[in-house]
Every structure is written in structure tokens, then in C-alpha cells.
Length: 345
Image (cartoon, rainbow, N blue to C red; front, side):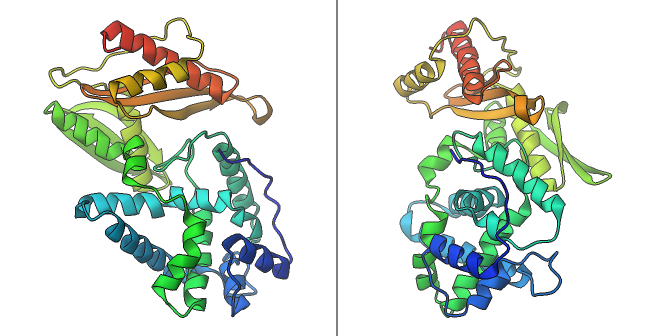
């Protein structure tokens, strides 16, 4: 869990360079590369990080590809692609920027950027585990950009040596997402298709554009299930799949989903649910903040919990609570009652 910090940009470039060098544990031969890597395009009086971002995207992708290819010889191409994507996605790299505080050293001239990053930092600070595929709000691209540009500066500075580059930069992007970790937070679109295929249901995701937003809608056997909108098509698809999973609990012999009504809240439900999943050899429960209500100083939260089981996927929402932990406990309680009612516990 990250501790949110206020977004105060370090305007002295020499201080910023020394601080980032300390973060990545690397002394630049050419500090101007790092200065460029820390300069947002809104600063027009000096070169921005855009060229380095381009290089970093490729260099980081290649370094991670080589690592997982050698580390997991039993994975096929599709599994390797999912693992690489999870490690270098915008969501993942944005959280790297927050975890190490890189966002504080970006030179920029836009208050909008500052507001978006602040909001995302606060949201990430409320997560008990890092999201691999997308949290309550879309990660600002600038956060991933800065990680890519800084890593590219290292790549160029060390003479384009991929092995040396990985030795230097691995500490920044750790912990590496492993197949086991990824199985605990399956990709929502993949999960949606897999569970529907088990029940021989047809899934269609349709898209359209409305003003500045892309909209994705999920249909199962021709029936509308859920939709979501975002600034990008892929993110809209991701959140539409999450919304669909929230409504669907497929069984191998059934075609409908079950509405879940929370019963009396169970004290210590999170721990009890973990113990139950352990006994059943199910994956660790995954919690998400589904909704935040109220002003910043008095927010309340609604959380969901998801557990893939042999018969399908179980996903329920809890009641609104003033603390994330309480909201998660409420969701865990609802799921335990569901399991008892269905005799799966």
C-alpha cells in the first residue's frame, strides 16, 4: 500500500537529477539525458522527454521480454505476452512512478496534469494491493511516460547495453509480476471470455465513440450485460469486462447470474474468507474499490470481492463504508453469506 504525498514539483533541475539518480541507484555520465527525461512537453524552452519515452517503451519491453522468456521456459507465447503486458502496462508503470516518487521531479507548465496526478496518487494510496489492469480511475499517461523516459535515459547512457540496462533498472520496476501473482488478478477481458466459454455462451464487445469518450458494451448470447466509457478504447473494454464480471456468476450447467444481497456483516470476514479459500484451494480473494462517494475530506467507499472457483467466478459488492478496510470486510461478508447459501462453503 502506497502512502500518498502532495504533488510538489522539485523545480531545481540539479536537485531533481541528484534525487532521481539516488532513486535508481545510477550515476549518469551525461546528466543532460536525465534532464531531458524529466521535462514534460509543456515546457517549450527545452527538449521534452518524448523521444526518450519512445525509446524507453521499446527498451523496457525488450528487457522484460528477455527476462520472462528465460525465467519461465514452460510458458507459451500467449502466456508470455500476458505476463509482459502486465509488467509494462500504463497502469503498472504509473504505480512505479508513484512508489518511487518520480512524479515529483517532472518539470511541467500545466495545472491540469498536476490535478490528475494528485487525484491518482490519492486513489493508489487507498489500495491495499497494486492493481495490474486498472484501478478506480485511469492512470495518467504522464506517469508511465516518465518511467519510460527515465529508463531510456539509462539505456542510452550505458551505451545501449541491454544486459547492463536491466541490471540497473530492474530495482526500479520490481517486484516483477510473476505468473502466480498474475493468476491472483486475472485479466478481466480474458476471464470474461474463459468463463463464458465454459458455459458455452457467446461474448461480443461492441464499441462506439461519443464526443471525447470511447464506449464499450458487453453482450452475452445477444443480451446486453454492461458497458463502460473511457478516453481510450482498450480502457473502456477493460472496465466493461469488469462491470460484466460483477453481474455474472456463470456455472458450467447454468445460463443466468445470481443477484447477491448482503446479510448481517461478519466480524473479521476478510480473514475468514482467506481461510476458506485456502481450505478450498481457491485463489486469494481480490478486492476493488468500485465507488467513492462524498467530498475528499469525508469520502465513503463501496468495494467488491472476486474469487474464481471451480464452478465459475464469484463476485459481489459490499455496503458503503467510511473506510476502505470496512468496505472490503462488508464485501467479504456478503460473499461468505453467498457461499453458505449456495452450500459451496
